[in-house]
Image (tube, rainbow, N blue to C red; front, side, top):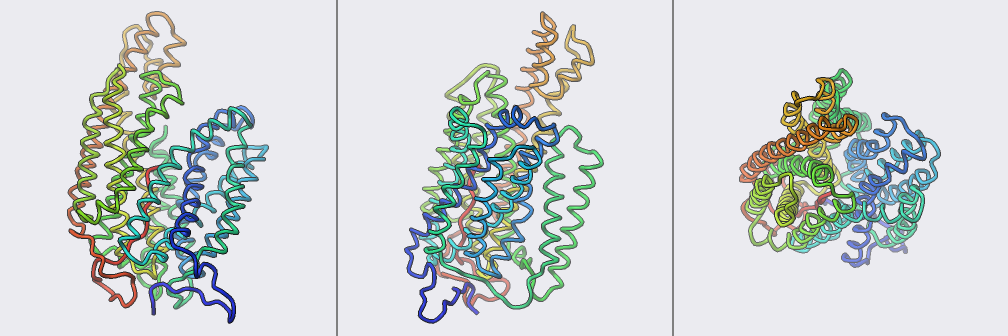
Length: 538
């Protein structure tokens, strides 16, 4: 049976998308990616306005921000494998519709609970959209060289979406109320839904055996618990009972899911893919790359605003070179992959990123714009190079019948890496920052302890104390934060070099002899089967 099948149309009727130009299809899919990428970041600038209007409690505000990525990450495997079963285009269009409806509900929400529910529905829509778009893009670009170019365009669009989100949100908030950041999704959905229905081709994977509903729900619940627990590791109570219970429950469900898949004749996810060195190594590289990126972005934003005193808009502009460099790497990725191969490309990306991180250790209490510009450019180019090569190599090893499941694994590893990065690097930062405030001369012990929680809280305590005590506490907090930043950067560099060593297990060359998964043997399979586009910096 062919790895990817196109849904048959009734006699005399044209199959949707059957004659569509693949580059037009790419444009439609990139709009999908742009929508999800923008929505992932556009709310960040609206949080103060939402807080003022809806007056959510601290826990409610946390859920408003976190429920979207939590639900999206949890349901990727469920909807990725469902698309392989019932049709990827069908799941994508349903995701479009749900995303539009949820956006309208979020924009008109009048209570925190309604907004939380709407954000959860947006996460469901995002989980339906992402694996389906990756799978369809794989289908419409059977030639691996063309597909690599499509990956580059795709990743560049993702970088644009990540950068445009906060800027667009800030513009809308200056002229409209906070709900407008959600309303911008509706026109895109009204256009994408009919165009996608006409232009996008339908495809499925193997349909042998029943779809494992129980396994899909186990995976969703396990991932939700694990991702939620990982996020709490970077909070105020990292080893609390709730955190440990979520980690244990999530890990236990995922362990049971793996055992269930190994016993089934027709599993949701072919776990034998992990026995391929290229596949398992690439998953690890994605996790390590995201671990470094998200933690560093978070700390860099705090440094720019709290140490250098830049405004949120100025901070966004300072980080813009990182996004532009990522776009450039995405557009050059196809050529680099063909010339250097996955092993050298991913390893070089890790090394370049490590070099950028070490260079940024030169950041101090005073603004050094040339150093920041150079470091962020190298950081963006290196990380995007790594992610591009790792995703392409990972998904080139997956059978086309498992395209949706493989795409979901890539997206899930991306989300887990981001969550672990915030928790791990945040913990390293706190461990290096807090001791410097344990005994500031003239400052009471209780105030010093409160200041040790974060730099922002230290500034609040310093303003309350005032006078020489406040000035001494503020100076000590700034120095301690810069010291913690340097330690965190060095730890990140070590993790990135570990990723470079792991990348040595990837294939040396980008083989293009196999255009599809048709006729592919079981395990081990020959390398060179086509890949699926990657998810870029967000």
